[in-house]
Image (cartoon, rainbow, N blue to C red; front, side, top):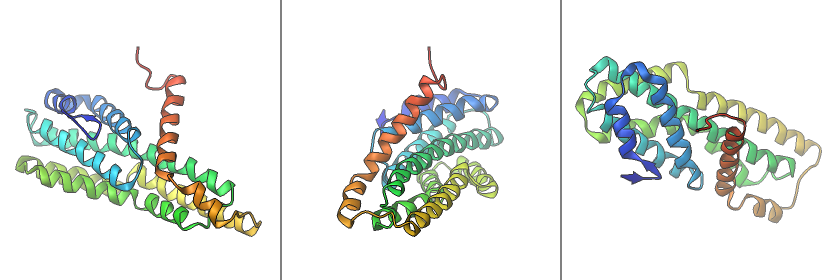
Length: 222
């Protein structure tokens, strides 16, 4: 079944049949599936949440069929979180590259720019919230504790997404202030034109990033 651009059946099968010892395979598969799904839609917060919830639901359905037991469940769900985290970190970087263009053109004072910055700041929170909601909605009692423990562990150390988001916001804020100090600013109409369809622009950047990685040999399949 394909939902939100994700082959849920393939993910369910992966989690059902894979040993917890093969965590890297789980993490990579989840990351790749999440990135592909994000590339198929405008990168709005709502769409990002929908993708995360769909991946979480597939992980729950597959893990519930696995015979590994609670400890294995927690390990596998932890790898699922790591995979999604890695994908969302790429989404944050795509936002960074897109917003950098607006800073360079003096559009950093526009309210849409500021709204995009707020979205980046909330990426980690939205990630955790979407996973928690989807895990609970799955209604699989045997997975409630493993999901809670895996989420708690990630929250405790902090996600790569959150770390990247903090750095991006700090960098862009400093650059925006410098641009303002130098008097680099375009008209409100020009700024609005640049920022219209921003989510689509970020999607394009994310696709470009993935293509660049493939050409460089990363994730290249034979």
